[in-house]
Image 1 (tube, helix red, strand yellow):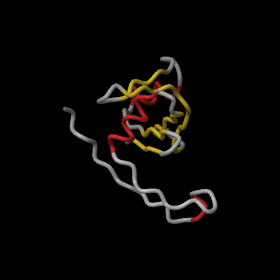
Image 2 (cartoon, helix red, strand yellow):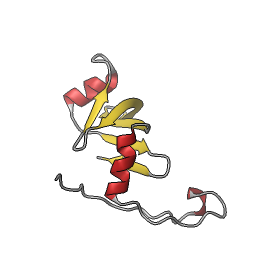
Image 3 (cartoon, rainbow, N blue to C red):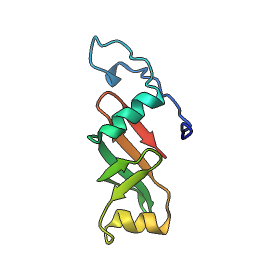
Image 4 (cartoon, rainbow, N blue to C red):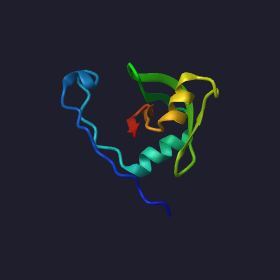
Length: 102
C-alpha cells in the first residue's frame, strides 16, 4: 500500500470562498481525493517557473495511483520549462474539492 502524501488543509474563512448560505464543509481526506482523481474528469492547470514569474497553462494530467502523467507537446513552453527546471505545481479542480500538488 502506498503511503499517503503530506497534506495541508486551508480553511475557507472568507465568505466569498463558498456560495451564500452554504455551510463550511469538513476537510476532504486523502482517500476521498484519490477517488475523485481516479474518476479522471478533473480540470488541471500546470504552473512552472519562468524568467518573468510563473508560466500557467491547462493540460491533461492523469493520476496513476502514485504519480501524475502529464501530456504536452515537446516543443511547448511548459514542456521546455519542466525539462529545464523540474519544479512545478498542479492546481486541480475536482468539483467538490480543489487540490494543489507541488
